[in-house]
Length: 143
Image (cartoon, rainbow, N blue to C red; front, side, top):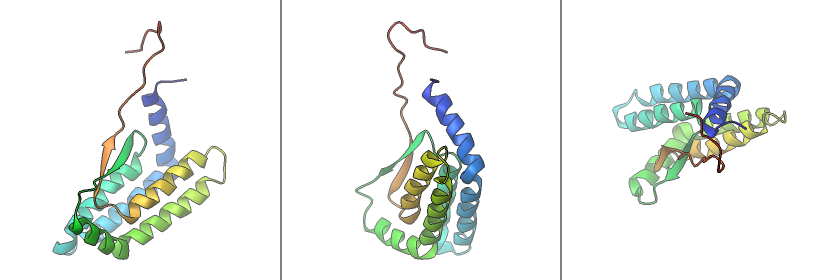
């Protein structure tokens, strides 16, 4: 089996081809729409950040910030009404379509997880997954 970075890269390429490009396009469209009004620019920035995650999700994870505060909660309600439910629905549809094949099941599960983030993105941070892979004793690690 390959190094986790190599497997993640392969997963990200397959994800991009199967669902990532059009889901990211939806996030970019929502971001552009949100940037029309000055008051909703923070939603546009969040949408562009999520577009990057929707393009290349493997190797990164979402960490919820429990101390995000009331502003984040209010923002999530506004986001849910304006963009969140549409994006979450797109992720659910993509997840169902991906789960039709056995190879697509892991990607469908990832899409369902992204649907939750699409509903409530504020108060969450996307961070890289720490590479915990270590070679077996006596195995020379590849550079």
